[in-house]
Length: 439
Image 1 (cartoon, rainbow, N blue to C red):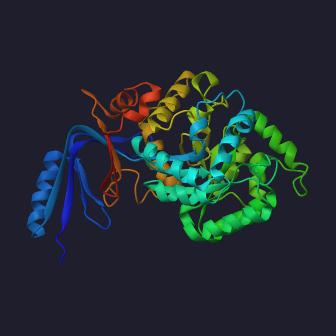
Image 2 (image 1 turned 90 degrees about the vertical axis):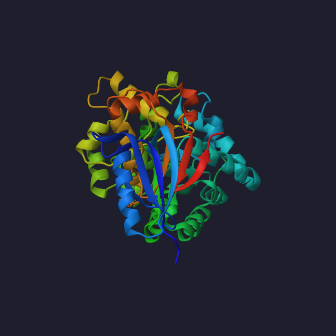
Image 3 (image 1 turned 120 degrees about the horizontal axis):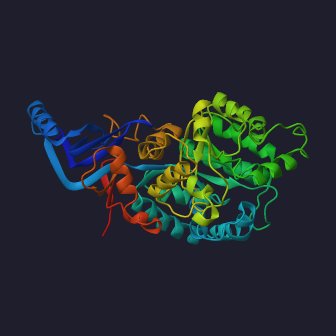
């Protein structure tokens, strides 16, 4: 009979609950079980945990306890980044005066390189390390049109990731285009192979034939895969899409960008739309009724002077009013930096600058962790330190003399400049195992 083992991590911790509540424990401890599940048993003050462990030792004869002392460090649940392009890592700091120009001039030529399998594998390994260094342990991922970039992403990324190859069958450069048959074939292959770890991914409506989206959506839903794409990121994009689709048979009287996706069967409870900035009340109702979610990308949509695309600001209050689920995302490479701390800062600062009330760092942390897990239907598995969830977390140096969670999160998030936010995380654990240690 195998000896029962618990791991106890002594540390401070921040435990997000919702937009308004985050538990902040100084001199605490988190305990989780050994393999196969590495589930959290308790997370509380150190003295309470020690008393609980004494009782457990009496209850389970021969119980082994592994202690990890990280006094002076704060544990936080692993980040969920619900919209990013891992194949755009090298273009995130390129000039971004216009979305469509940025795509054509920098992004698409770079993605062409991923046709080379050796190059793709090498970049996937490097990007996986970047994710861990930022504490990102889950998310929705866009790869290139090449099927092997899905395999390479899922093979290398540590955490709960869902990856999809973008579908580009029209209005795309000749070096980055697929036939309809090829696009549908790839969706069929990878949806069957990876199920909920795969996402049917039209790049966006202008580059993907409606019949491809319709057939792809059917396949994805049959295999319980996710669906992800872009929606209403800029006003120019919205005008372009509507003008384009009015020329398609059956779409002559289309009402909105969201309505295009509805007609193609793309909306649904496992669909995540990137951006969603320019949405009418009618469109928000469509998203809400279909239980379609939105990944808000504040750093990518930020003003050009702040290294964003200048797209605008997502109206989270309106999304809440219509009960549309949303979370935060980096949108690498539209977003300039991979760290979700940078995304959280941008979310808070942009809304405060617009004098939008109610924005806090507690909300930002929740939307970068548990809310993201919820979008991916993983909130029962991970996202915070609730009992029976996986031990997925990262550690940062504890701030001094903080009165509450809001102050602690703000101090941690603003400790370094934007380009050095990826240096905050000292250590990562996924399913109870150390997967990153900063040297």
